[in-house]
Length: 160
Image 1 (cartoon, helix red, strand yellow):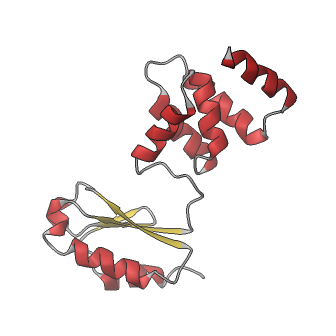
Image 2 (image 1 turned 135 degrees about the vertical axis):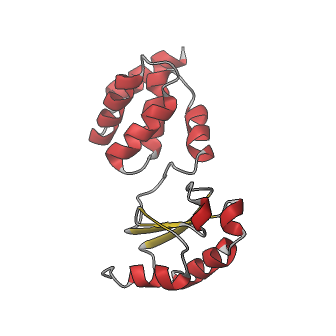
């Protein structure tokens, strides 16, 4: 019954171009077994992040509730709800890196970039580079035995 009501509303309210693309991507995976994660990754790759309208479209295509899709998006740290900043610093906080100073490095990086809205500092749990910790990814490039000086040196190449 609710489905028919939604369809009537859709006829009155046209989808945005973004929603059309999201629906097309989702429909491409809909026939596969357990496609939700693949769809979320594909939509994020297409748009750069997952907007509320993406979550609604995916839920509709898969006949899931919006809450189910949102729950999956919010559970996994890899999914973005907003556009990414220009620069990303990810610091490993897993045990091996923690044992060689990752906690202090993470705190120092957060302090260092506190004034920059174009830089995001995030913690991740293992890059698989355990013997060379603390490890970090700076703009997608994995680095080993990272210090705050290494992070500041990488920053020097960024334009403001």
